[in-house]
Amino acid sequence: MAASVRRRGLITDINVTPLVDIMLVLLIIFMLTAHLIARQVIEVQLPKAAQASDVNPTTLAVTLTREGRMYLNGVQTAPDALRAAIQASVAKDAKTQVIVAGDKNVSHGRVVWVLDLVKSLGVTSFAIQIDPTGLIAPVLEE
Image: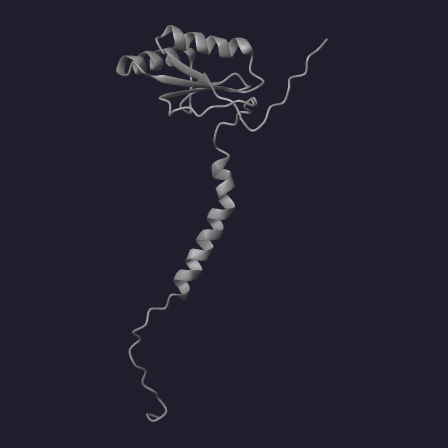
């Protein structure tokens, strides 16, 4: 019986098959969940314009949604908190820039209110963010 038992040598090679299997499973999980992660951004339909210019990176980004929410740099904020944040930013840097991104269904008065607030607090460089992919003429009622 001793003659039928074979002695095996030491295994000196690394078996990468389990590692490849785990990496492929992780890749599939990331591919399936990537669209869920990307959907957690604030969804705003920007109005379209034919003429658009590149804007330097901004210090503050104000976003207005169609539901009436206001965001400062991606964090929901109230008007008083927005005013305080702009004042603090202008106190730190006199060249503070603001970009206002308003959903196309947001009231014009709401956007003008934000622009007036920004200007009254000493911000001299501000802009309205648009979608430069194409211009659709508004429907004019007669």
